[in-house]
Amino acid sequence: MGIVNVTPDSFFPAARTESIDAAIARGRALFDEGCDVVDVGGESTRPGATPVSEEEELARVVPVVRALSAWGPVSIDTQKATVARAAVAAGARIINDISATLLPVAAELGVGYVAMHRQGDSTTMQDNPHYDDVVAEVHGFLEALAREASDLGVSPLWLDPGIGFGKTTAHNLALLAHVDDLVTRGARYGAGVLIGTSRKRFLADLGSHHLEVENRFEGSLASEAWALTLGAAMIRVHDTRGARQLRDLITTPIEEIVA
Image 1 (cartoon, helix red, strand yellow):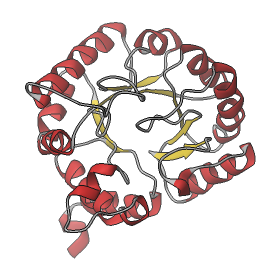
Image 2 (cartoon, rainbow, N blue to C red):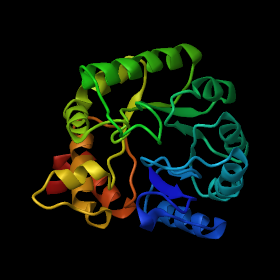
Image 3 (cartoon, rainbow, N blue to C red):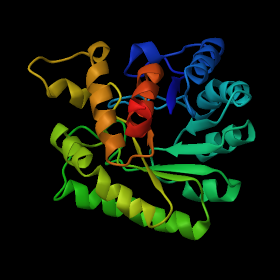
Image 4 (cartoon, rainbow, N blue to C red):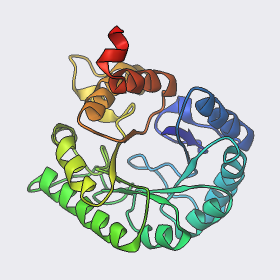
């Protein structure tokens, strides 16, 4: 899943597109680089981000979704029901919902759904994240959503533990260490797992030097490789070319590589 941010304030400057034409061009480039899904968002959800109005978000994303849907599968990254409905009407096939509140909308519209866990909202989620057992709590929350989605007939379905959304670095690492557990839980209900670590802040804390967002490519690939080897069905990325090569390498049977 490649990222198109029709925003001026998303956390990775290279992924920002401040015009409709630029967003469409980026999305087409992502498809050309081998992206399976392009995820279009019109509101930054980074820690501390300022929410945008429904009208502004609609104006940003609907023309982009409509154009890119002619090139391949598009998901809409939103937590607003009105935006989700308009994007699906424009051609989006998946609702990528960081708020985990739009499952009934996905069921009504007959589209795929990404359910993500988040503690708090964009303005508060990184103030003081706390869990008694982050893996049990996040996985339990997502399994309950998967059960509900299965009952509603929502498919395809992905579960996203929400790396960086109301979690400390230790929380993020614990969730990554147990991706396979979430894969097993999701499989009971026909759900895959989506992991989004690309360029995120926790990667800056893992080495001997603090890394700014421009220098987190290698860490992104390493964490994505880990998630894929533990069974993640999709990775959400800024750097499609490198991630696609990584995915193909990991999923190609060794017999084909050495033949």
